[in-house]
Image 1: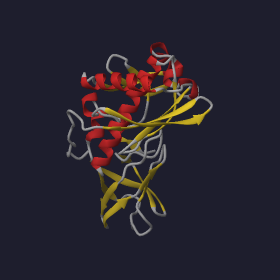
Image 2: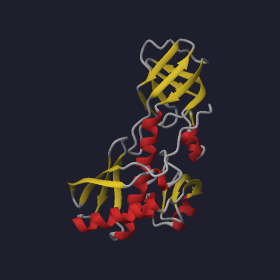
Image 3: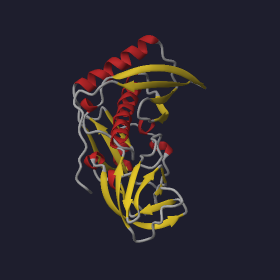
Image 4: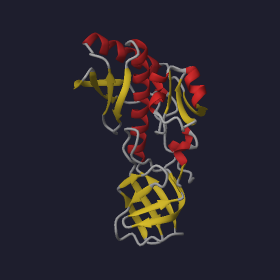
Length: 253
């Protein structure tokens, strides 16, 4: 089991350096007892960066795994179980994805309210552009313009973004299950980490990385739409320059 430090608090997502210990080695992959690196999942790409250890600096090129998180550093790393390392994230890419993922929550929440409970059925979060798959819907120009206007108004209001741990019953009591996709999660999952924008403008279980205020996003800019069949449309977007970007926290976790 790897402790995912970015899940401990939203503030931890602004750190880029952490100390950890190697607990497992498998060829080019090492598992750490704790990490700030986000592994591939939930539509969000993995973080990259470096591990600084007893044999020098190693490039982290891929991160995967839900429980034990594998950091791919190459066959010649020479790390052993028990070695102490310092991880350093590629901050600019991490922060870009934090902004993109928060924007996805905002747009998905507003679309649900505006267009008869349309569901978010998929997303892909990247640093430069991202996409959301909605169903059932067929966007026209007016719908897209209205959605962008409302999203950017909320960004200009600088609404706070918070996280908490809630029970399944608590979430279902506050938001419809088709909005939170709770109906797609196994019944055995009883407690979840929840991201909330403002006063429940959006409230959704999510293990991704996020900013703490919408003012960090920049305006949502529409890139295009594409039919994915059976009532599903893909909405692609990028973000403009943020009004109030936050800097990295350089203290070591």
